Image 1 (cartoon, rainbow, N blue to C red):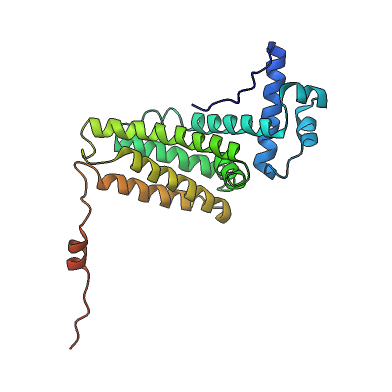
Image 2: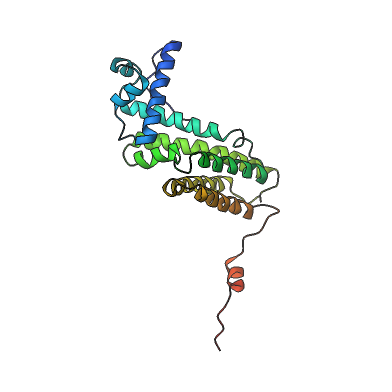
Amino acid sequence: MLKRENRPLPRLTPRGAATRLRIIEAAAELMFERGVGGTSLDEIMAVAEVSKSQLYHYFSDKNAIVGEVIRLQIGNVLAAQNPQLSAIDSMAALRDWRNVIVELSRAQGGKGGCPVGSLANELSNQSERARGLLAQSFESWRDDIEIGLRKMRDRGELLESANPEELAIAILSAVQGGLLLAKTACSVRPVEIALDMALAFVELNSAGGPRAKTSLEAELEAPRNVSR
């Protein structure tokens, strides 16, 4: 769960809440297209169709807006993956979720990347507060994957020695890396490859799946050059 800043929100009427959300959504759209540094408050006000006094009624500064954009984007990202994300409890369900990620990237032509990943790339070294919020965002995403993997281990589909937290980190890393390469290549293929390799890694920890070779087994099976 993402924590909110200590400053309490003003008491909002339904109209006020709608205005505040419109500002956040306008900022999220602009920041995804242009980056946080490339988005000004004037541009946010123009897209949201609000005055400066309205904007400052709801937000103390641009950093406060950025915090809400991060919360909005992780909520949108997780919502787009459901119900498949929350339904992970088997390899089949994990593949169904994988297909959702691939199709979301395909719908963007591989160009969009991950909104949360883009924010992390830009902000993590610039703002400790933003970095903390982004870390919480990725933890929320990882937790959802981890819960599914724990269900798989509890039902005996994964080995008792499998580590759901580490597997979830590996899967999420594959998602982020695949989306970044897809964005630069304008192709969904990197997402497919990265996720397929991550799921193959999960299968190595499957109770009924292939077992990872030891280093000695790999060495014995490796082709050797025989000198004559």
